[in-house]
Amino acid sequence: MFRLLVATKNKGKIKEIKQILSDLPLNLITIPESDNDNVKENGSSYLENALKKARQFAQKYNLPTIADDSGLEIDALKGEPGVKSARFLGEGASFDEKMSKILELMSDAHKRTARFKTVAVLYLPKEDKYFATEGKVEGEILRKPEKKEGSGFGYDPIFMPDGFNESFSMLGEGIKNKISHRSKALMKMKEIIQREFLGGEGMVEIKINGKRLPANKYVYEVFEKVIMALVDTLKDVPEIGTIEIKIEKEKS
Image 1: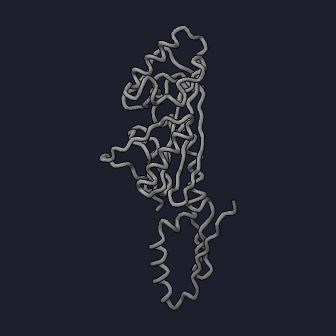
Image 2: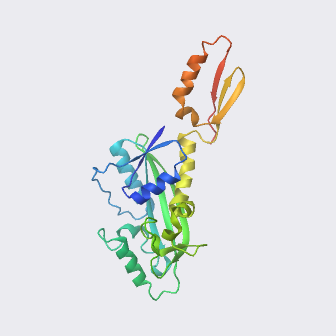
């Protein structure tokens, strides 16, 4: 099973990532609570920050690592806080304080259009190689926070996505995980993981006496021991002449 480290301690983000990638045969590993390393997200772009986080923890734990950086870009504030969203008003400021300040700055603003952006990075320490994807969702800034306990985090309570009449927080995780910026970036990353590490959408072809038993391609890795045990058992059965397992890698 493909082991993947999630480079964040944000419980809301971890939960969201796990839900989006839940149907893949992944062993998602989180950073231990005892790990006090912090990555300074002082880059000039989302990609720079995400790559910095992914590389640092990937090299530390010697595991493929996924990280992301997100930002809220508000047109009335000339794109701010943007890449500085996490450290807006300083590292110690709470998101309630940040949202209050943003609403104060926008008290007279008629144009309230905004967007969330995410760049996700998957870094491979052995190859010193990374994959990056981007997601974006358009919407507007509400005039006051709309918050549902246990749903949403960060700036979610003041952001209403296009096509809805409630904040990200009020919409709940089910809807948010289908339409959010992070969801869009992770769905693209999901395709990369499937193609590069889980064999893509190709088929595993297992033949016993010429009869085909097709399965999704990553099944071979997930159930390798079971398949090999089956082969080892069947090879001594006189009625079975040949056993074939055929794996074809998709052409990129």
